Picture (cartoon, rainbow, N blue to C red):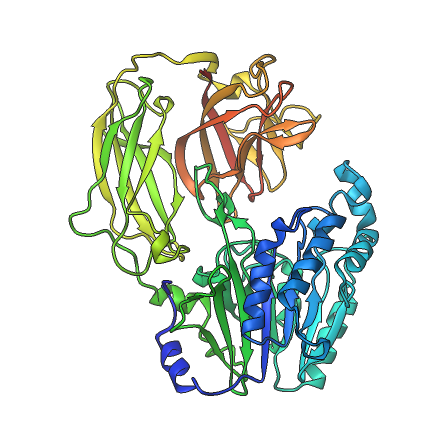
Length: 573
């Protein structure tokens, strides 16, 4: 598997120390999200079989063991672990450690009302501990082969005990001078690994203890993502997931991206002079970047730590298309005026983290105007045998005005957000031979659709200079009665022009949501940072139930301004 962005020194160090035996091996998996059957635990079993082959001393699940609080799922989890280690004497079995996280509290005791779940976190965790056969409770500290560890939960009924957490870390640090202190906690410290999302209190606390090696989960993602290791005042590693990943919060803008199935697990090897993080695909035991594992020198020196993001961003290679690569635009099917865009894969290494697709239109003044953006993930996370030869994206007729000239521009982007050379193609939009069935339309959503704070109730927000002011909370754009009338399975196409002006990541996400019961029509979609102008978003979906009645939910970013333009709702036959 590819190893884009790995440091050259790691390969040399790996060969130098090849014969040395580690003092400690830890197998790490996270976000297993098992359901109620043994089949849903298959990735857990494969991970444990991998850990058995590598003779780990401890196995850690960093949280969200089950997708919901499933008693049968915990029993199934225990059964597959026992299957994987069958025949290993108890004294030779690796120690097991569990991190307690939010998903394992959901629907505890059969409760379906979400507002009830936080009231029973402690009870849910106690049941989980008993059902999964865990030795440790939510707060735990100890050592394995002389190396200390600390773990604490994502939440408790009455909130986290930060004083207790700091006491565990400080005592472990004082009692083990010069040794790493492994801290396993579900949510990462904010501003560290991958997307940068997480808990700022952890960042502040861990920064006081340079011995901390934090290993977290929660944000899912692939272990092939080189941003999954971070060093600053301490070291932090995101352990990926054994479920799926991929949404707008990963930096993908304007697209309802499918989830990527993931099979990554981590083995941490501790030596006297270094810590090595080795990343594996549990399906076949193949190692990501086997010749260049993540390798951090020890003792830890923040000034020279090799995995500081700012250092790696500057050194990272930029993906590129082959010199003769070209886009192909062809007519879509169905006669509704859409097109299909064919995109070649970028050549060589590193493999792109994503591809950025920009759609521009010629304005009445003859100048190009940004019209839409739809990013999608590249093949960096896939084994070579799984990588596609090219990509094909469909763009519905709702994006276009017949007779107007448009331009696609596509660029490969590395994990640090640096774009390679773009390739482009121009075309003239064709008139549809089968006009769309428009249910409802407005060319002035700011006038026709109230924008209200929160998830329910409240008065319409006032406009300020043609925009609404937004913060990090929820706000919703409501539509007239009857727009979403139709039976279960009725198919709709929703298109909306949105002008968002905001700072850096995280940016706002948008999604059509049915309020009661609370469910989304499709995955959340991220808007771009900065001021990208008015962009069009188009989504196809089917109603899950006849009674579903949607508003457009905007949430999760910081402060900024937003305005809405043209909206069209179509029925798809």
